[in-house]
Length: 328
Image 1 (cartoon, rainbow, N blue to C red):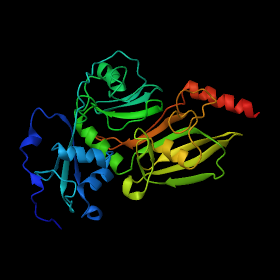
Image 2: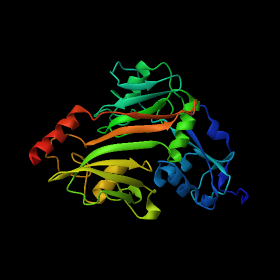
Image 3: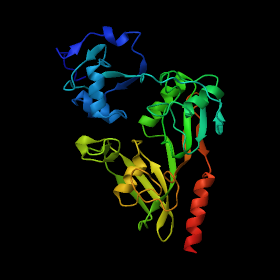
Image 4: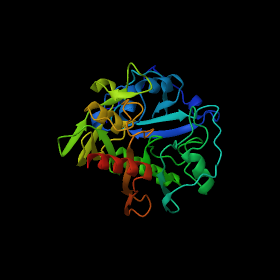
């Protein structure tokens, strides 16, 4: 193991275990190819966090290497290091169960697979304290994994508010750990269907372009230089071409924020109805035409391979039918 001695950039563990400091705790094991990386770059690569937010967590004492608290982004990680970070809960958000109808596709003692409707936010956050998937789950499901904290119980992955489709939610910590590892290892099957602007000439393709925070529009994501973003890979297949649109199937190899929306806009075919990455909405969808139709993973307890399908919601099907009629 190429482990260097700890230095003066490190602090004690005392504050990390403070009972008042609640939040999601995640651990990572440094691989050989990552040895020697700065800790801010390493955590940005293996998590869904920006380097700016990692620096904030460092400043606040929420990151450790082994049992030692790390305060500076210049600290490097080495093979076999165990890095632990805590993501504090946001303040001022009260999560309460709400009797909201849910389309539960599958449920057992370990997990729940939900077909999320368009317009529903996955978990509470700024401006979205009510009507979330988490609030609905707390009403309908007896218990959820506590790893995600009080605001994100059971939440292993997310899809955008106006994206419909399948999500798996963990009911136990064992399930949460297993599903999180499968997502990290890119073994979870995630297939989407979208309608994008313009005609894509290629029958299939792969978009491999790093994604990071847009330097000019901080609320948006963008394709950025390698050293400023995280690896992102999207596979697409053309299902049908129309005069002004293309219907495509997309498979995520990675799962970055807004990945499909950013990648399709990057190649000149933004998702129809996307309120952020295109201003065109002739179909009046009030949100992107994007549906998570297939989800597959290995069951954490039984090790059975599971695969689920969700039909396209009626509002998207009607829009697609209108495009077909216009072309006839």
